[in-house]
Image (cartoon, rainbow, N blue to C red):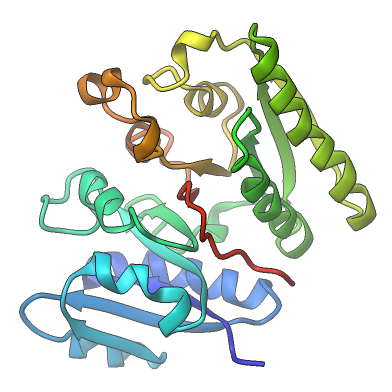
Length: 271
């Protein structure tokens, strides 16, 4: 079987420490995956990556193309990168630029705040990390649940699953199907979780008051699993207020985010 990789996507030396430390931890805990560093530049290759003593790829080109090819070119199962709300638009760590560069990513990508998590995501957590996700009516909720199971099994995370409350019977039925999926998959794996309800009106599904943001505000986890905004289902208010995923990236809690793109050819870890 080919080695599987956790890829640390590094834009510069300033964010490298936080990204590498976090990626190293996940590589070790996800059944000893391999770690690889990657930098993409339009001008020159980042030869300084060799200073870290870790296998690396430094290429000329654009981040979006390189990221889209991660699962096929490098057999990657997880990407790790940094976010910096003060970074210029030319840096992949800028929230807008990050979402644009990863818009076609076919694997999960973990985003950490390079300022708060200089020593890595796990270094500041005492005991078991708490992981939060919302389960709504989208079929992609199942992908979030799969990754939640990995966090529980391999990182010993304590899971909280927040459920928006819908008035529409059709939405409730789709959500119930996803919850039944939890009941089918989690017990045989010995995964425990806490289910909590969110009082979220239907009118806030795509605004800055989205269920994910409400759950993050009220439950304050160590890590959150979230879907990015589906470009096929954008809301006009997103253009005015910003997309929910961008608000998650700029949230004052600096909570690390495990993001998944809504797409039909998403790659998931199957250990």
